[in-house]
Each structure stands twice: as structure tokens, then as C-alpha cells.
Length: 365
Image (cartoon, rainbow, N blue to C red; front, side, top):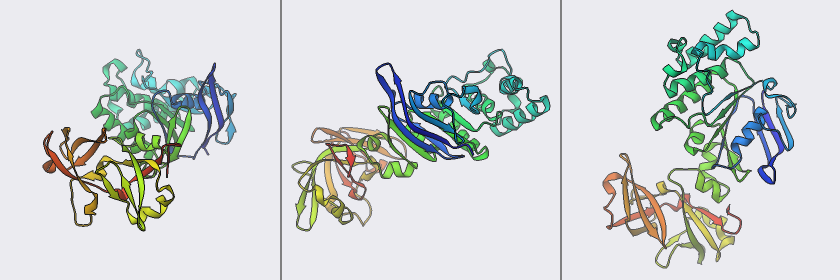
């Protein structure tokens, strides 16, 4: 078993708490992504798992064994870095086999392991080249191959795609996911890119200011965020947020966004929000849930007219931006439905996907 457990882990640099009381259980063969903005503690957490940073307090266990005092070379982990860390004077084969040679693995086994990894990563024809003869994507494959040949208990990835261009990042995301499906090894992956986190992970760990905000499958974090931070961080473009007030309307509830905009709260949500009636809240709705009116099942009372400020054609969809109460709002609409900047456009808010947030605690109701 190669599960990883962090128990009450704290990392302090002088007077600064970089990681604050982290508790996380990563299952055997699971692909877990740590995601968050710069300075949230995700890379520090990864480096503590690797043994490159000492734990101030708490325990880290790999395969059931506490490894706080175990040197990195004895933890049976393999790390893929952002800058690839390849030896420029060695061939691809030599780079991939170097760690095995240090462990005095027999030559026939070294060749078998390197060739097996090279076939998985489709780099067999590159084995005799040197790093300077490779593209960024090929170098990243070699770095992954060097990790795979070791057959470690745990793979650690520290923002491995940051140096690649946008198209290659997409390609390498698919590659990493495909490799994990073939080489079922426990994987901890760090990134600041929430798209990488959503597409790669079995579970995503959202970190903020040294703490874990929420842990869960990508679908849960996207559709059922627990805090305003998670709601705003996961998803691109980000969720729209607006000050709002819940008002009683007979047996139902109304959501007031401005003097002119008053929407009925769907019946399925009314009971859940009833205790917040009369309170000032934050209303959240993703851009894909603000569209041109479409379909017969929509509630016409959730339609409204907005004056467009900016129109961004994206090919298969168009982003339109407008303001409500001096707050910029983004909507996703069909390209043929988008108006021109400065023109009014009829839009529909699908409140079946709404979120309400308590501004005092930043928790989603």
C-alpha cells in the first residue's frame, strides 16, 4: 500500500505559518491535485511529503510509516520538477537510467525498465538524444520517464507544465492522465491552474493561506463549493458574485439584486434558504447559467435586459459583459445571439444553479 497521510501538519518559516494544521488522507493509487493561488502553501506541502522541507509539527506517513525523519532518498518517492532537472551532458537513456545505476540495478533490468517507460511515453526514438536536442514537451516526457523507471510508491509533480505553451499544456495534461491510467501509482500534483486540477484529479485539494478550504472530486467542487473562495477559484471564467437580499413573498422567496432586478427563488431552494430571509447575502451564479432565453422550461420571471459593455467572441460561444449595481457580470451566450457593445440584450438567469453566501463567514448556505 502507498497511501499518504498528513496529520496536523504545520510548517513555519520564522514567524510565518506557510502551512497551517493540514489533515489529508491520500489513498493508494489515487491522483490528488493541490491547487490554489501563489503563496497558499501547496508547494511547501509537496516538499514536506518529499522530505525537501522539514515538518515544524505534525506527522507525514507514506505506506503507513511516519517519514518525518526519513531522508528524501529513502522515502521511495519520485519527483518531477517544473524545470525538468535533466543532465545536459547525458543522453535521454542515461538521464532516465541514472537513478537506477546509483542503486546498482542490473544492466539488463535497467534497459528493460527504461524501454518500457519510453514506450509508455512514446519517446523510444529519443533515447540517444541529449536534452538540448529536445522540445519542452519532450523534455517533460523524459523527466516523467525518469520517475516511472524507479517504480516508486508515490509520484510527486511540482507544477510540471508551467514552462510549456498553451497548446502543449493541453497535450501534456492528456499525456499525464493517460500515463496514470497505465502506471497506477499514488500521485500528488501541485498546480496553480484550476483547469489542470479539474481535468487531472480524482480529488482536488483547494488551498488558501496555508489551509485546506475544501477537498473533493472536481464535479463536487464545481457544483457544490463550500466557501466563497472555492466557488470563485474553481471555474473559468469565474463565478459571478453580487450583493443580494432575500425577501419573503407569500409562501415563496424573492431575490433582490437591485432596485429593478427581483428574481423568484426556485421552489427546490426555498426551504433551504428560508432562514436567511431578510438578510444581506452574496449571490453567486456561473457565466454558463446566464444565457440568452432558450428552451420552453425557463421561468420568464428570471429574464432581464442588460446593456452590453464588452463582447468577446470565442468561436463556439461568446462572452458578454455588463454591469449590475456597478458590479461586472459575465454571461455565456450563443454567438448568433450576442448583441453589440452599447446595445441592450435580453438575458436569462437560471437560478436552479444559484449559490448564496453568508458575507460574515464566506460560507455557502
